[in-house]
Length: 194
Image (cartoon, rainbow, N blue to C red; front, top):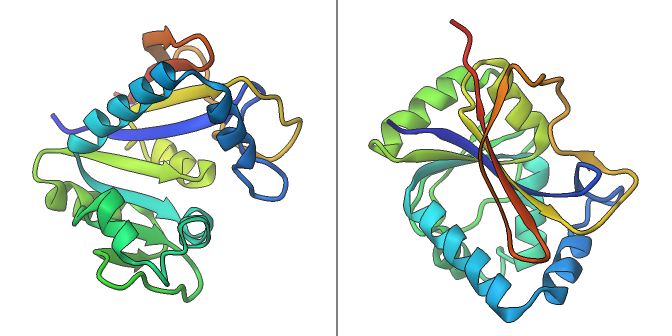
């Protein structure tokens, strides 16, 4: 059965971006990892994305991708990374459209979007890209099945939180745990009410 998965990297102290909204800390940590560890994470992401049939993100995450990859000037990069996987971007404002990308701009409740994503995914998984608030809304609606967390060897002290929600130990079950010498990878399954 398809799963809604929040695949995300965070600092040890639980932030996915620094106070300026930057991920440079993550790229710096990644540059310190061995070539073997980087290649392993790239392969794990390829496998993860091969099982992904739809994805969603918030406006801040989408705008970061546009800036970081200069997607308006180089829209082919979106295709290189995400192909034709349909994407839903939650926003309350008008955003630039990456030419040729299969993107729907939405707002409001995550439930109808989840239903649209599930239909479009054709039995494949749904990737809740981020940010933490959007992933939290999926968790609030009992629509988030897994948190796949890569912990980077960095302490930020402040920034955008991993998941600005209280989830207690009775709601989370650790199903996988590994490390590559630099980064730790943790997969938690979320208990659904009922």
